[in-house]
Image (cartoon, rainbow, N blue to C red; front, top):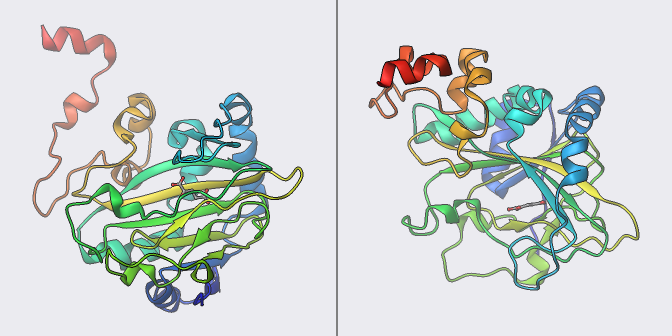
Length: 277
Ligand SMILES: O=C(O)CCC(=O)C(=O)O
């Protein structure tokens, strides 16, 4: 029997919010993105989504057929950049990832649509990227799914297995342990890197479920989406320090990981050939 997905409101006490996330491995937070932010992100990404390839329907493929995705959102959407460091995410990230690193970073960005007829995605853990740790793994990843449209049990709402972040490797989910995230646009589903999840099947005739996934990892791990080449350097240099740091263009001051010479980072392309010759 599923434990269910706890819910909160964006202005709830962050410790109480994190306690729910830590206990269930997932939590839905309501009223995080404003309606104007949802509308702006959708507008900024509309052409990219329209030209994205709809996945073919191969029964064993990781990405189910009738879904489409666009990545590199730090480059493509100034509004998603703003949402990327939302205070709710900052509070949950500090509490979860901050236990195991002095800096945590943006891991993956993607806008994801699940179209009518799409099947359930295979259940997986975000932390399967790092198979060298036995399950249950230490805290490595925090994931978030921003609802750009209403998520329902029928239109592709994310499947989750609450409690599975504490399971050993030999336990798999029974059907009645899987629950689908239902939330109105503007809400955010947060889940831990060890929680089994996947996109839900869409049995509606014409409703495309639209979400933006942003995941974060420990600053000393490799980022799954290479943020260093997913946004032009000129844009990186114009970002506020905190945002540039979250993207991973910064050193982890505790142990010097990622050290660099700022004067090289700031070189204009025309200066690069001169300085390297
Ligand atoms: O779209 C979703 O609800 C989840 C997507 C996901 O888990 C993935 O693409 O890895």
